[in-house]
Length: 213
Image (cartoon, rainbow, N blue to C red; front, side):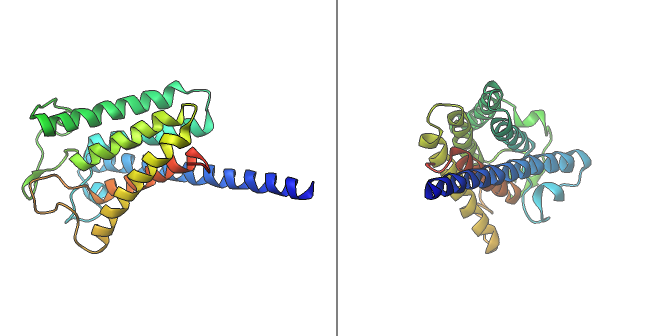
């Protein structure tokens, strides 16, 4: 009886720890998005890039992170409002897919231009535009957020969150060693703050997927 009670207590404590980590990650993800918006609005792009020699996070990416963070927090605090995380995930998924169609199909939906009409250049690429790698990861995270509201969140949300976390970590390692991925080429690289957002939101997904995730 004592062992059973102890096991239940440990399980509850572990679940509480998972939820706390998820809440922190989601809050930091929103914070990164809001900081980026402030940077673009005020002209202090250092807030969106961390260092002057790094490319800043695009405003469209900041919006996606804000929606992802909101979706995670609502799922955590108000699980009955399942439609809200799904709505956030749908918007992020639509924006990310539109970006990928632009890159692969040569179309221009003008989503990034809604935020930054006349972008400056960072080497051979334009600033204020979502990176293709970011769009792919947003597809993973948005799909994982959808999965959280389903009957088997651990089956899909956990692996998708882990995948986004790993990719974000790889980009962060590049920055750590002073060799950021895709810098100097013709493909928009993932910003340092974006990599942090991918890493944090991925961890948030994994934590909310539970032990099985």
